[in-house]
Length: 189
Image 1 (cartoon, rainbow, N blue to C red):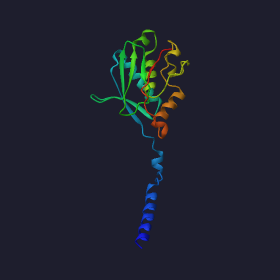
Image 2: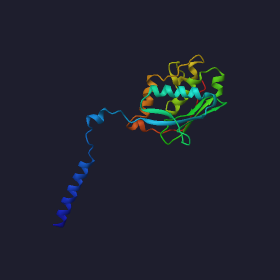
Image 3: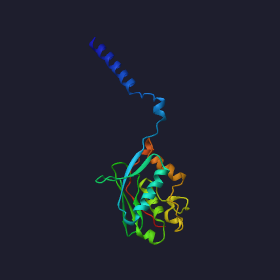
Image 4: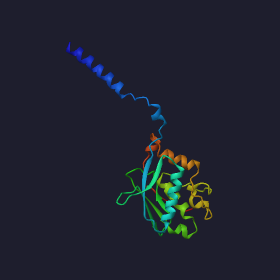
């Protein structure tokens, strides 16, 4: 008798657990809301003469994609993207960086000394932080073609494929869950 009662109770509890685990249907208002945007903070405090180029490149990315937004870090806040000016060639860690993670962009002076556009360099290197590899050789219309676009190329905007890939990197589902691999990409033709 006790065995029958316990068995019935276990069956009932299992059924309730399954019903409780079923996802509730989203209301029309919930379905119409946009995906949650990932906010990444950047620190351009060591960008030296490239501070305005970095700000322009941030504006380019913020106007080009919707799933991720770059914002300046507040004083004392740890930024996910550190931007540093140095005397080497421009380079960056390959992302996509996640909130709480950290990558570095080096605004190497060798690139601008050779005549490459500082805003394009900054946008390109930020693209690495957002998970985009180099696309070489490539045309000027491809931001991630980097130096193979030539010194006359000033295009700082990602093309449709590059925008789509960043949107996927910060979207929902498994595509939006890939992690930073930490590889440093040096944009030398």
